[in-house]
Image (cartoon, rainbow, N blue to C red; front, side, top):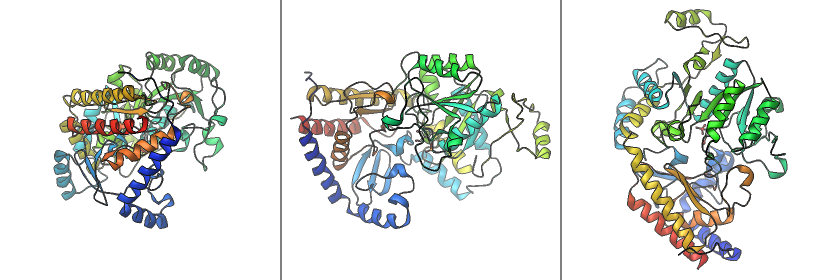
Length: 481
Ligand SMILES: Cc1ncc(COP(=O)(O)O)c(C=O)c1O
């Protein structure tokens, strides 16, 4: 039975939201006490502002498999999975064992290790890449890939899409969820900083385009002909819920990048090794010039990576002004790159890059846990979760729709299908909040924000999916009944 979408009674949402938040407060008093203590030492009481939400975040104590426990001892089936870091699940036994051995034998040498080669080889195989380099986060990976693209092309401007998130460095911390009155016209969106402290001059080089609008992008590229070093894109926009590319959009990006001599960078921090063995590249069949990875490739240990075409990545050399080392690199048989635009070397540095802890974590996660046979199982579970959520919506008339791409999905609490940030106008944040607390109070943990999504891991089970659907069904029935 399909029920017509309801105008939900606002008073009912408010009443359930308030009741569930009060219940959350009762169940999580130790978290509240820790939050008060944390507020004395850290702005917002958290280490990253993404962890903050009202009335206060859960403080966690323990996690294994698909389960996580807060400091009050409440158990949750974890569907957040650390913003999608944990496609391998919490503390996978194979990883835990390998890391214990690694910790006993040194975690940082700042000399290269064999696991770094093995991990680079694995990533090259998955993403059809020439070269790979490691960093420590997604932010560093996109920052480094942009520098390589700029060095390689000798150009300074980059294109970023409205609604996309690529980490917290200045170049890209713009137009993430810009206020509607500052967005500017769709044909030439404004570059809207998402933070104070970002110099205007810095973001003058970041040109904004609307997602899923290839003709507008073509016009923007024409307007900046010969100036664009890179087009940076999340192949699926996973920082405004779940917004997939329209059919043909990524293919068109590929063509436009080629026509304009720009480097196409896929930010696969959320999609890589999650949507498929070879990430969005495999899932959509479009090959970027460079790609960025982080999150899931480390199984829960901090890591970042970027890579792509050998010719472009070969722009990476020793620091300008260190000729002795440059000669050393030349002596290894590697060709010195000739970079258009006059620059000669692109620097890529980092004390913790390629550290043994992250490299071992990556090798075990990719070669032993997120193996090719994991993906059909993950996708089948995710499709069942989406189909089940959609039937709850259809049966109750809850306004919204369920969507997933591979093992990542959500319920979008919007009346219409969202294709870009511009039409994410009617997101019902109050309804989302009521559902978040309702589910959390019954042991189902989602990410604490309507702009994120659930991620399934190889340690989730069909019973976990059933429990989610049962609780979500109760929520919808209570709200609409
Ligand atoms: C698509 C994307 N790129 C980059 C980043 C930044 O990664 P990190 O938080 O590891 O710096 C994120 C983080 O959520 C992301 O979702």
